[in-house]
Length: 407
Image 1: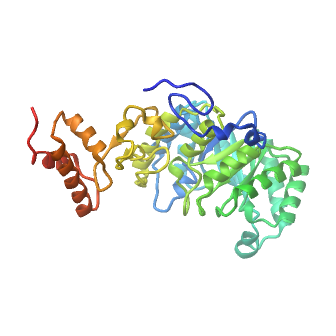
Image 2 (image 1 turned 60 degrees about the horizontal axis):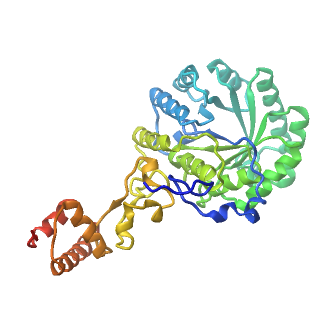
Image 3 (image 1 turned 120 degrees about the horizontal axis):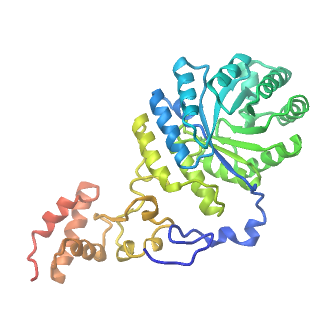
């Protein structure tokens, strides 16, 4: 591993764009002194269609989240089942440094169930999105306000950290949302307010606007951002929210969640720590094993090129830079594969070049003359085209055996 100068944007483990740290860029940021990650894999992640987690699996995932330094764990929704209540209570008994939260409707019985499970705090959900109020629930804003005040007062009375979570926030009528925030915070001050992009349909620029809007309207209450990925913007919106002043980011391991999923824990953590240069205490290499564990428990397969945790992120077929791949990985990648417990890998196929052939022959400790190597490269390309994939190690060895080895 090469030694390089340590800075916010480059060290032995990563080399990202130094433009991220130019004053003209950073002066736009309002990143809070303390930023926390709130993992919702055990609740929102399990809402992925077809996914069911056993109580003991939830406990193990929570343990591994704690080991990785995740600040808050949403252990589940106790109203769902007795099994869920037991899992939440068992997670709390682990004694993790992470704070344990329960997810509740604005109902007193839900809040009491959370208290009985021993949680540190609750996420209180109510609808505020215009489509939800008009087309699904047929609720007035006044009803939402009344229910919110009652639930927040009860949670605070019971000594629970209270996150006010008016969902489908990004499709709320702005006047309705302002009225909700103003009246709720005047009567029953929550500990923080969530901006919930339930349908994953907001732009990063609008996310920044909403973070500032909530802070101004509530007199500076902490803001939590919860994003979905319907337009592929969950992580971008989460990072933009942090830059605008949001203190907590909700996310799920592997980006799991309903429909297109939630912001991915591993991507958000890497973005904050590497692209913003803000160390929030997450042990990113430990997220690799956690990702594999969640994939195994959920039977929810990841793309091999999934950002951060993908198994093929450091695999290259192109011959360009093949000789640099193993010697100087940061010339080829923004992340050093060794930092994540991975290895850079050179594979052979249609896009290979002579440098790739030389590297693989050196690995096999085989020497061929130049003409044989040229023909071998042609063979590799042709097989890659014919099979429409990369070659296996065995297939390459069989091709090599066609040519006389130099002594």
